[in-house]
Length: 206
Picture 1 (cartoon, rainbow, N blue to C red):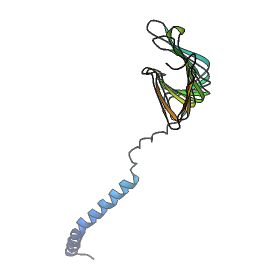
Picture 2: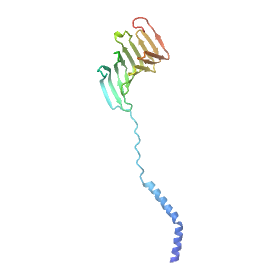
Picture 3: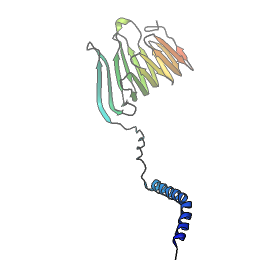
Picture 4: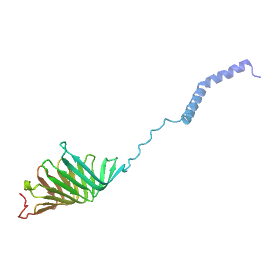
């Protein structure tokens, strides 16, 4: 039988180890809470951007006009696909007709084309041809650019290419491995293996 004195001795021993016991219980409780409490909801990871078309055009024609109502450009094609991830329009069998302020007509064709959102840049891919027709009153030779890739900047009237090109101006013919043509400044830069043939006669370079 345990006497009152015995209970006191036992209690004294327990109180010595009570802080350690409480710390142990607290540690076990914290561990249990950490294991059982659900974590904060994770934000869903960003979905990978897919290059999928959101609308199609078939056998279409898109025209733009100046503020005065004059036809500025027309884009035609057998099919076009718009891709929202890049905001570009990919066109099959494109044909582009555009007029500058002086009324000169530029016609561009290719097997494929990629146009940015506002049409200020159009990349012609495969059998690309750009032809500038000048009114007869201007007395200037016809200009034609050919290549597998031609990059057209309509607002600046520039054509660039990092691939072999052929330029025909009147009776003259030039070739190069790359090109930078500025129609406003009338400057043509050919690089790489550049060759040229100048032929006298009607339409010769002036």
